[in-house]
Image 1: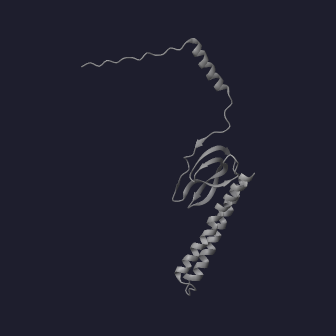
Image 2: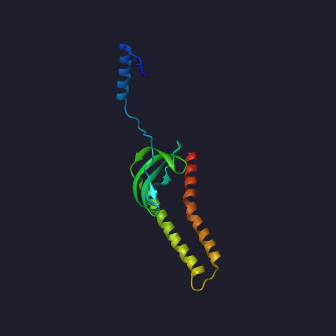
Image 3: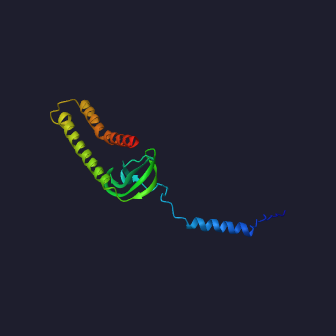
Length: 174
């Protein structure tokens, strides 16, 4: 049993075709680079709330992009801002970076303020629930205290959603 291999004929370009290819390559190399780089983000990772992630949406533009900031978080609490990006979102977890920006100080300040507000709100809510239902002389039954706690978590959780919708609608009107 013998095997035979046939070699494919290689196509030979004419001198004119080679010149045309060389001209196309030199023209493409001399063009200035595009301003927008589109990178798919896969480098943000959190384990048990600790790691890097993006938080916030700000400065919406009519083309569908917005500014977001990368953060290092510890137990879901933003600790340190890393970098700001102009991105196009595809749902809540995937996006494409359009541009790398300097740190958006306004977004960083609002993130810290919102975090402080949520921590103070939770402290007040825990104190209220302890006073109403878990102290030595409870005023309300335990199930009512749990309902008050659950209802108390809703306002600070809805605040970013409502502000984001307001900003998106304002951008669409302009």
